[in-house]
Length: 177
Image 1 (cartoon, rainbow, N blue to C red):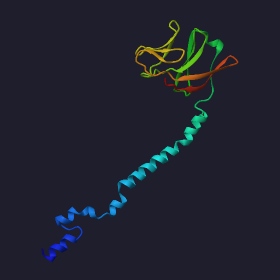
Image 2: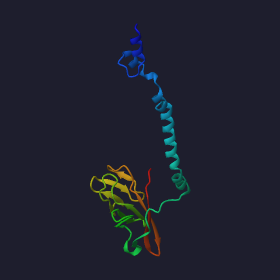
Image 3: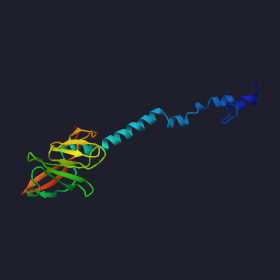
């Protein structure tokens, strides 16, 4: 082998095949971009995201909740006899809701959009049940759970208070189970 061939092999960015096969010997990029650095970054980012949720978890465990909606006057008790229902909007003007004074004398309220395809839900006094006429979905009036038809989730409950014969909506509760 001549000296010229040996020189060509040791020159960076050479056209020699031997130099191109050994490019991984130069480890300057490997020190910056290796698995250990990637894992450190991924673990650090995961910990930062996890720690950022701690204040919200503490608030939830202590029972401190955001004020979802304000107290809204819905109706007077004498306007809604037993076995009747009425519609109202809560917590915003675009959220339709239904207030039912059941045949048993209970007051219950739910968001009236069916959990299947958002069709309006109506109260049937004869069956004492909530009905979605779009696809024959039925909900238990006492707890909002689906009884028959395609709906799989319960209706969101609207919490009520009665004070001096006036019915107020005070909050909304999403339940699972």
